[in-house]
Length: 127
Image 1 (cartoon, rainbow, N blue to C red):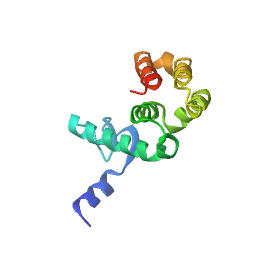
Image 2: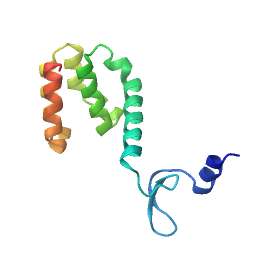
Image 3: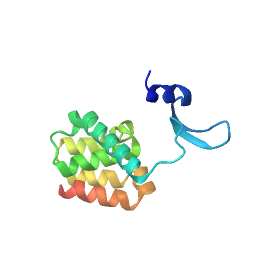
Image 4: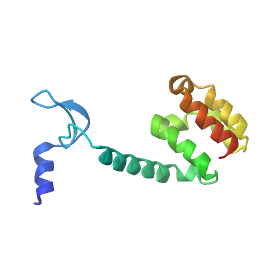
């Protein structure tokens, strides 16, 4: 058994934050904090995974529009972004102005504000 295996066994894995026995908030294999570098690596992995998972539904879109959908999925989860039925219908019809409008009509847009405005403009223009 390797050192990594032993630490994993001792720490245990938790996907969501929890308070350890000493009351410290912890996640993963006993992480109490992450460096910016570690966070950047995790972010890249998550985005790469979203790109792969969403490929079948975004492959015909321009790279900029693909990035919009991936950005939304990062924030909402894949199920969340797939719930934008009117946006997807507009995308299917290559009506990107309508897709952008549908993005802005959502509860999500109210919650994220400037992010939705920026992403909807990229969806509208394709760049």
